[in-house]
Length: 92
Image 1 (cartoon, rainbow, N blue to C red):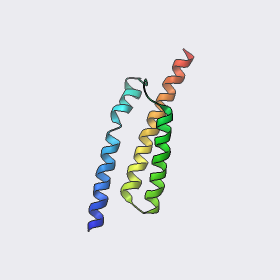
Image 2: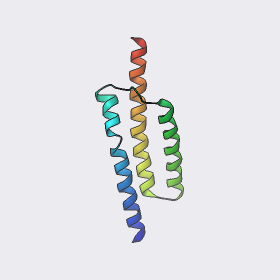
Image 3: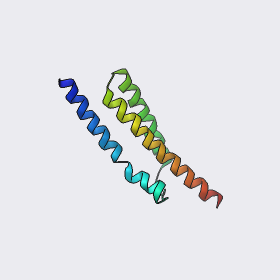
Image 4: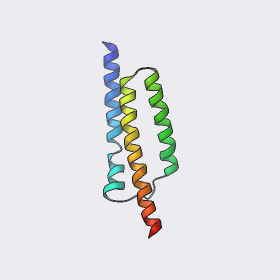
C-alpha cells in the first residue's frame, strides 16, 4: 500500500513538472519567440532526463518512467521549435 502512495506522489510531481513547460512551448510554437532559450542547456537537460528515464526503468518506477518520457517529449518539442525558428531567421 505504501508503494502505491509513493508512486502516486511521483506521478503528481511528474505531471506538475510537465505542466510547468507549457508556457515555454506556447512561447516557441504559438508566439514564435525563442530569445533567451539556450540550446546547450536544453540539450543537457535532455541527457539528464534520459538518464533519469533509464534509472526509472532499472528501479521499475512507473512514476519516473511516465514523467520522464512525457517531459522528454515536451523538451524535444521546444528544441525542435527553437531550431525551426532560428533556421527560418537565418534564411531571412
